[in-house]
Amino acid sequence: MRKIVIVLSLIFGESIYGQIGRTGGDGVELARFDYTMIPSIGDIELKRTSIAFNFGAKVKKGLLGFGLGYDNNAFYFKSTDAHNLYNDFTNLHTVRMNIVYRRPLKNNWVFNTVFAPMLSSNFAGSITTEDFVFNSLTSFSKRWFKNELNSSLNIGLGFGTLFGSPRLFPLVSYYSEINEKLSFSIGLPRTEVTYRLNDFNSINLNVKPEGLYANNSSDLVLEDGKIYENSKVVYNALKLSLGYNMKFEKNWIASFNLGYIPVSSVTILDNNDINDFNTDDSVFFNVGVSFNINKKSKKR
Image 1 (cartoon, rainbow, N blue to C red):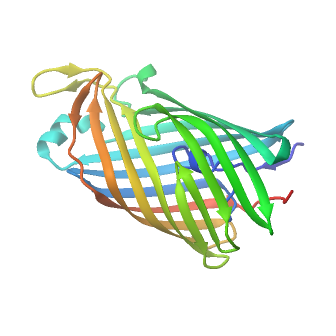
Image 2: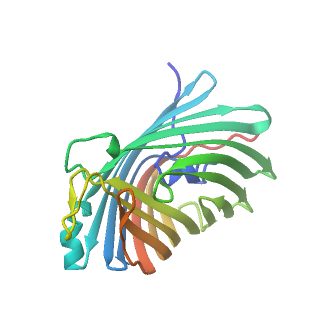
């Protein structure tokens, strides 16, 4: 029987872009739950609840991993007129499946490829091709060690909803451990500095983009009588946050993040923009809990 191993966290939008190519000091995630609240994106409030599960196995020439995830995004329009017009977007669902393949190459290089199709919709009508979004990435990563400290480089190309509407974008990141307590990652999509206070507690400061793209499977009827089929909501933001992670059991980690969003946008669109909401800067709060497997890297 082949040895089952836990692969890198595959929670789309967070991990397949930000974590592939390196393993953090707390190991890799088997399951995670997250809750995020953004109280004021202009006249809009956003609440997000996420859950994801990940598993994988060794195959003949590498690792094959699978992930399943679900997000519920709730937009609350504070304006009565906006709420009445766009109430179809107040409860959005995203269901994703992630498939990742990692193959070791020569000189500590690794080939990574991820395919992550998802359904993203309010599911108010029948499921159609308009509800499907295809996400993917291909990258090459290299890891090396110096004085028992780990560094890695990841270079690739992604396609998906990281910035809202599906598009191509580059993936470039460099990760390095300065010492046993301090590490950093710089690049796209995530830049982060982490300081480990002890074996159970750490703090981090990070900057990253966030996107959402979802279909309205019911008709959108505006005040002027125009009817739009399969209209979309697009949300994107740049998030800066200060986080605290606490290991409260051998494999359980709780995380708390308080952050600031200097730039964001929320747009309802068909072929063209229907409404581009005025958005302001905002604060946000996030809390999560994950079940991690400690998997130490072998020095080569």
